[in-house]
Structures are given as structure tokens and as C-alpha cells.
Length: 308
Ligand code: SF4
Image (tube, rainbow, N blue to C red; front, top):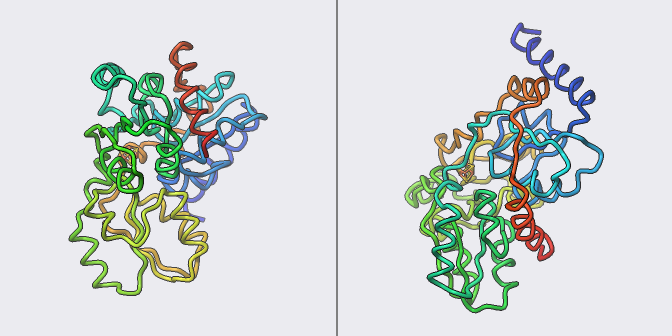
């Protein structure tokens, strides 16, 4: 065993000891680094993690390995638990592209039009919303509303994807995920030529010109399911690179080709094993949501969970 492997083993053993001592559960998003996914009790996409956070019963502490809006969602759904984000700088540029004040202005401009907010948003923005959605359920959530017109925020690409799959008229906020918006249609075309047998899967946070070229447009949870169940053996993957860890583990006979080696979200990569350990040791950084905001945000998230 190398010194580095020995060090990692010690870290993992110490995390396991502290997890028991603190009565903690570790949740990790599919975009986390492989080592962090490997020590998590549960790994999933935003919808799966929201469901898990709402159902965690036998823990006092939730260590959330993801970005701030996800940890806030866990706190909103499990207010009695201590929720820790191992690096408080792990934010989401997309979530930061809209404020609660801007949602209030949108509502004033479009009175009576319901607001659907992607979970990639702050607790304050969720509190201003009628209902939340994730990339896995966005079309179903929009379809569940009676109104013919819907405000959709903050991701313009997911909004365009939903608009193309519903008869509702969408008023779409102009936010985007810098990681997914980076993929260009030319890259998909080049990969199709290089790998004619491969199934092309992309995330709906990609540009419409990119989703138009894909065989499958799926959330990360949807991609993992599709990769497991498909008869195909080669896949082009248009989302954050962290997902490849689980895809390759779960499908040893299949090949997964990332659209680009540059598809990393620097915020997701802030969480390391060391930071998970320090977080459990010192019980920090604690994620707090003021109660009036939490209550209103919870309504929007629970309404989404009821739809799906
Ligand atoms: Fe935000 Fe995009 Fe990173 Fe997800 S991948 S956390 S949407 S910046």
C-alpha cells in the first residue's frame, strides 16, 4: 500500500468513526469527486437527494456533499437536523443568477402567473415560488399547473427544453449553468462522427442547439438509469464529469465518453475527503435558513414532491 493510499484509508476510517459518533448521514451529488461518492451513504441527483433529505429519520446530522442550494434544500426539508456543508464556498453560479427581489418584480410584472423555480436556486427564491422542479421532473411540474402561462427561473436552457415539451407559454429567466452552457453543437457533431455507434446523452441545462442533436436528454439520475438499462455499449455523456465515476462502476462492460474533459463544475469539486472529516470533527459549516423563509420554501418543494 502506498503512503497516499494509506493516508486515504485512514481518512475513510476516521470519517466512518465520526459518522457513527455524530449519528450522521452523508449525502453526495452525482457530480462529487469519486472518493467522496464512495464514502457517501447515498449518491443521487437533486430530486433523489431532496427525497432522501425529506426521509432521513435515523440521523442527527446530514453532511451534504454538493453545493449550497442542495444543502439548504436538505435543511428546509429536515429542519430538526443539523445540516453541514463541508466547504461553505461551494455555491452555484446558476443559483446566484436570480434574487428573491427579482422574482418579486417578475410577479408584479405578470400578476397571477405561477412561478416554477428550478431547485438550483436560493432558499429565498424558492420561498417566492409556487412550486419547485428539478431537471428530472420539470415538464411534469409545469404540466401539473392549471395556468396557461408560467414563469420559469432561473435556467434558460432547461426552460427552453420544457417549453418545447408543453403547450404552456413560458416566461423564462435568462440564467444558465456555466458548465453545461459551455458545450457546443460542433462538439456533439464531431463526437457522432468519431463514435457512430454511441448513444448521445446530454443534460437539459445544455443549450437548445445541443439538446436538439442528442439521442437522450436526461437528468443525471436519468442518465445513470438509462446507461444501466440500455443495450448499447457506448455512450457520449454531456454533463459534469463526476457522473462518469458511478457510470463506469455500475457498467463495467460499457464505454462512456465525456463530451469534453473541461466539463467540471469547480464548486462541486470543492468538497474533499479532508473537508468531510473536518466538517464532522468541528460540526461545520452549519447551513441555516431563517424560519419564515424555510416554511415558504418548504411549501414549494413539497408541492413538487407531491407531483412526482
Ligand atoms: Fe451549478 Fe452548474 Fe455547478 Fe450544477 S454544475 S452546481 S448548476 S454551476
